[in-house]
Length: 91
Ligand SMILES: [Zn+2]
Image (cartoon, rainbow, N blue to C red):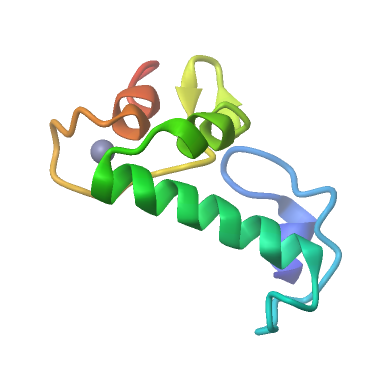
């Protein structure tokens, strides 16, 4: 985490993460609840093709040009989901 805070990631600097990663009950921190909500929306989209929550979350994902880099799905090439299509948009 120190390396990410010092040098950022391949796509962006990390300016707002100040905690050391740790396991915590999501009822105790609002940011963990936000992460849980994002994970829930992504899972519901990928497993059930439900887009209502996903579209709200996905539009906030980090982008580099036209490519979405803040959300990735590691699956077989040629996947036509919104995540994969958007990630390869600028390739
Ligand atoms: Zn995909």
